[in-house]
Amino acid sequence: MISAKAGRLITHLEKCSQSELQNIFPKDDIPEILVPFNSSDSTIPPEKRVCHKIIQPKLNDFTIQTSPHQKEILANQIARLFYACNLPFNLAENDVFKKSISMLRPGYTLPARKSLAGGLLDKIFNEVTTMTASALEGKDVTLVQDGWSDIHNSHVIAHCVHLREILFSEFS
Image 1 (cartoon, rainbow, N blue to C red):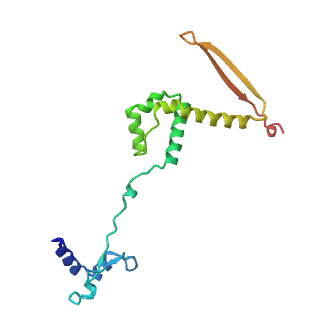
Image 2: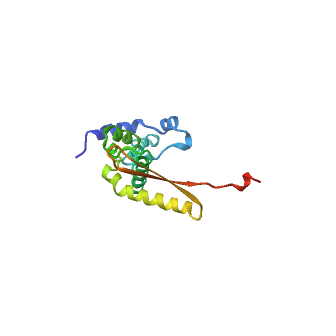
Image 3: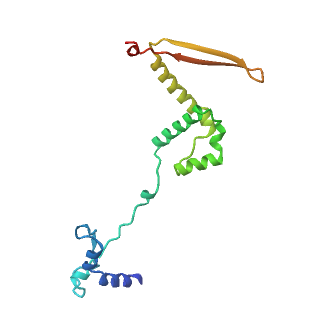
């Protein structure tokens, strides 16, 4: 069964000519050419047997895809943001924060607060500890310690490592 639209296609192919394509596209940039159903049909002159092909853009050109590797990198960086800025973990479940991240990276879902307080915290802590240990290896440091109690009379102890490197070029 042939659709009624076939008649419109044949009419279009009869009207479309090579000269029209030359007006639309520069001479060397004409896209793929479509030939009517029967190219040996002698009722249609050869110059009217062609029509330009419209190339439809792919949907991937308009979407952002996040691979599992990219998702892991983003989760680690967001976790570092939370830890560096001392942000509460329940911020990850705030609708305004979720919308902000969604606007920056559509389709990406934030790590949950339990993930920020659990596995991601352990992973980032191990990375920072390893990086700090390798940076301080073989160097003289001073450990500064302070302690106090909070309003609930819980003891709080803060530690700080101070590294002083003397550059001999300053003295010469």
